[in-house]
Figure 1 (cartoon, helix red, strand yellow):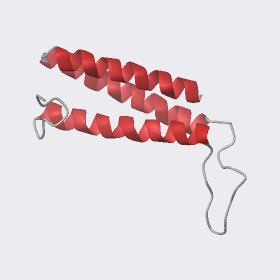
Figure 2 (cartoon, helix red, strand yellow):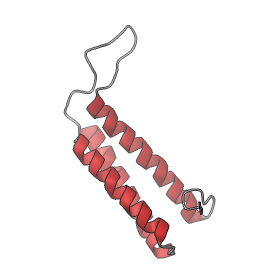
Figure 3 (tube, helix red, strand yellow):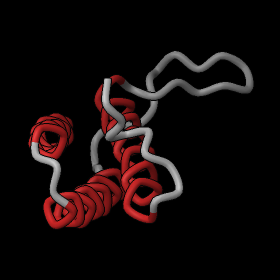
Figure 4 (cartoon, one colour):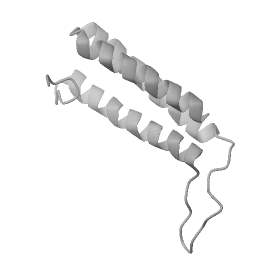
Length: 101
């Protein structure tokens, strides 16, 4: 499942660069839908993960995630933030994600 999370990250990064180089409102809307689907898919992967979630090292009051599960969680969080930025851009509230650099 961590491989699936990495694969989704690569796909969404490719879709972002495709939208960045082609300035089309239709393509940006399709990218928004694609990002939403990939974020929901990562949420499903995060919930359905059957591997070990916490490491054996647990100090008092804390529990650390395994690297595999942390990769899935961070992938979901980053894609959710990017989805929020896509929504802000599409509604015209903020064009941070597709601003010219």
